[in-house]
Length: 447
Image (cartoon, rainbow, N blue to C red):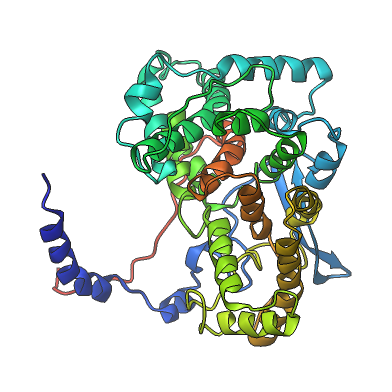
């Protein structure tokens, strides 16, 4: 057995050396005109490629003057807010939007039926895979479990290195999109059984159900769910499906794809990126913050009391002492996050159905108060507004989805965007992504 304690003691002793020799001052970044994290001081990303998959709009230019505007998110030329609104009240948009992102065109009714049929047929795992892979070494870190499963699935793919790279990659992407809910939910059930001593049940997906319906059905012991619950989850999946190509996990997909690596490795790399708390874990931090606020607010209807406590959080005097009001602001959007705008209507409907109006009132109060506080306390270059993750954790909580699955739900949606970008990278780019780093190393000896 590994002597983890001894190794940890050694690592702790060596940490000062790493900090001494791996720190690079802000002044050097300024001197050489290099942007930390590929972002300038306004939060705008350094251009690293072109894409025809999605687009984010957060500023408008009129007569040469650039000013913030309400955010817009476009999938393949369609405004995502309209995509959500155009889905029938009793219908689901995940599959239709997945087709749009993968193939670049809106499907006809027949094309959508064929795509849904293919996805249903693909919702199957290799014989004994659940027992031999997912249920072995169960972990609270569901993202790690899913990543292990993705890489292991490569061993079951007889055509992993097929010379027909494009159709083969497309097949693999569709299969992974189809089984991601199974990998997530089964991994949670294994953890919940072996680590929490709870009951074990494995429900197989139903071919006639949507992705959102299957996810809820497989998660719940009695397989039951309401149409509203499935509808709200479906909307959440559509809104998290893709985001402009410049986010960390999508960029990771394209970097690994550009090296010629296989689909499983590319998607596993994206998973490893998404699980980082700076990327996919935002909604969990919002939930933790909201719980902390409830514990310290005597009357949630007292906006002055709420504002005073938010000011303490912002000053680093409360919650996690990092001075952040989670769920507020975005790296790209300024006046508004279009995903939050369309999502909130469904959040409010679900809150009424679940009798969580008091919680909804608290969220609304924070949405009203926090941007003003942040604007007063911080020197900011653009507006501050709630982002989609401000509400997504609340929705998952109302749906009875455990927090261990929150980031995995994000992945179940975002794999569609990753897949679209993998295909675009394979077809349209052709060069390995190889960024440059400037060395600021000081010589310690003469050559």
